Length: 358
Image (cartoon, rainbow, N blue to C red; front, side, top):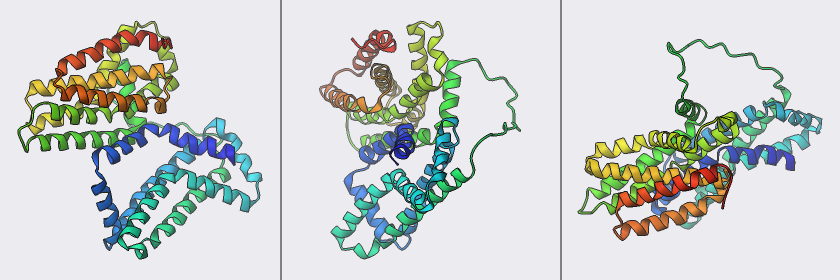
């Protein structure tokens, strides 16, 4: 059972770390406690509130099933089919515990909804949540049972019906963006929704009064930092998937320029949204764009020092954002902050890229 949980549940949260970080960034950074309370109260009081909650949870459940079926189809997971040797009752019990492990975020949010219901005297409205847990867990169990009863031995090559009329360009940037959009589309979508939401909210609040550039600098920096989930996925692409790319005879300076171009493309959508708001002059938007780009580059370079361990970078990111906020509040020039970060990243990149942490 321990091997089952480590090889499947932990792998699910490890591979989806970028997506979950972005979601947490949206929920904890963009939404206040009052808005969380309003959503929970809506689910409890609206006639169709619990139905909406079921639809959201079902989408997450389908994501878990898709991951489970795909993961157990890999050649290195052939050992999972030995679970057919367990008796049916033991196998279903262990698959049920596996399902609960995959559905942990839903269970935690259910506890939050129950606490709100207890606070507002709405405990008589929470009974569907228990049924939802049983239903979703049963769906995951049936998916796991179906997978082991239909071993994935050989997959026929997929015939491509549509072909681009032009050859794929021999570009490191193009291949990286193609992989990001094709394999991590959900993470990309959630990340962009959160970042654009924060940028729009910041600029709308900025337009309600007479503020200087410090307000949008702090708000848009937070929005740009939500893209660190995508930056982490790009690090995994380079370090875990496209391994031969690190052996190419390319200078560190050229690699850093490629990373700059790639991250510049990533944060372009929210920057274009800020231009459409017409709340800031183009020069100030350009300064904030450079600041956001410098922050992402510094984070990506720091990943090389930590060996790609995302959990080891969260505390420095939070502390760095606090320091950045203080610098902005004390009217430090935005170009000076961005330029300092760029220079520091350029200085540290060759050593951290080679694994030299001193």
